[in-house]
Amino acid sequence: MNDGRSIPAIGFGTYLVPNDDAARITREALDIGYELVDTAAFYGNESGVAEGLGGRDDIFVTTKLWRSDMGHDSALRAFDQSLEQLGRDSVDLYLIHWPMPSIGKHVETWKALVRLREEGRARSIGVSNFGSDHLRDVLDATGVAPALNQIELHPGFQQRELRAFHADHGILTQSWAPLGQGTMLEHPEIVRIAAARGCTPAQAILAWHLHHGLAVIPKASARERLAANLAAGDVTLQTADIAAIDALDDPAGRLGPDPARL
Image (cartoon, rainbow, N blue to C red; front, side, top):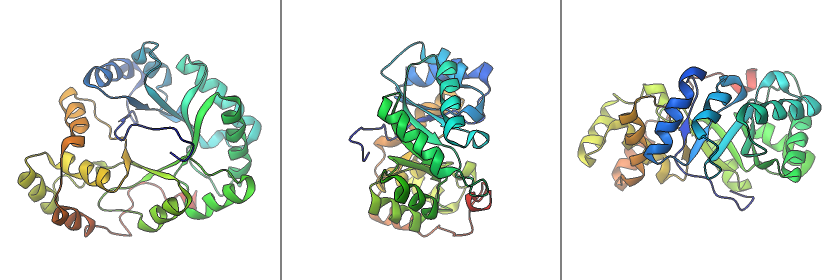
């Protein structure tokens, strides 16, 4: 990342993992070999994730500020609440979950995160779902570029312009919904490539992300799928495979909310 710190390329995403299940599934992910766990205040499972971590300090932990806590002072309070839920003195990465342009507080919120990094309580800071306009706002106001922007990104919605902006400003791209919420797993091209490379469709897609230098946080609850996702790092795609997946891009393929409209 642009702050000199490293982040695992493949992480364990906990979106929609109930708090009651989070401890067990997090433990399984760590047993399999995951070194990054991604949670958020909005997920309501920070305490379960903490239980699953079992006090380990060698695991990269990301959490996020929810949009109802936008604002400088409210962000600081929300961060303290997340630390309490996680049972930690600091986190590896703290993100603003959504820019919320309708509220107009993303700049002052970013200033709060800069303060948290300066205090050492958030070792790295970044954003999620920020468009290039939102990124310019925080850059112009503080001169501090987010270390990472976590955005919806999958073969059916590749966000090439935003990725180019990230590259120009040293911002790492991390993909949420990297499998297109499962919608891409049965695409004929994906199935064909997976069969040719002796891997699963999910592994083929994740390998495509990694080829393009994108970090990923796929969610899975079954142990075998957790293991298969992590093993995608060992899958090598051919140039023609990459080109075929690149060709699946659809600028209208967004599955989640449009950040510019929130």
